[in-house]
Image (cartoon, rainbow, N blue to C red; front, top):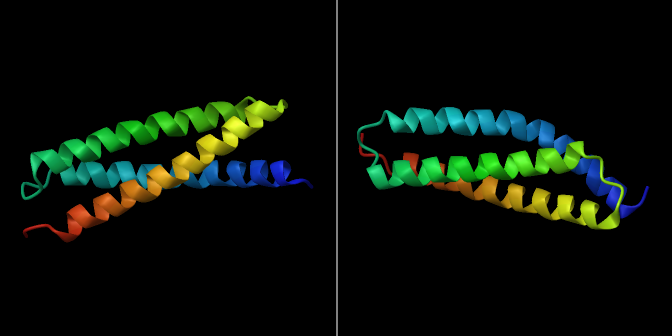
Length: 104
């Protein structure tokens, strides 16, 4: 198995896990929306991040479902996957920081 095939298998596995991770993230963002001690600016940032993550997830899913055969499509899928992983990590870190700084 070459490096691209290995990466494609990892992406397929990650897409399944991201379904669960995204549901958990969106649930938490929904809970934060109802917390009066969280600033409107933080809530807006979380909403914008949720939209961005949804768009990235859709893009990765569409590329994954297309079963690319051309080298450039595979590279695009790998790049989108890597960006999604980075953005999801940053989003979860931001959410954790907002919740850690709550004035309860």
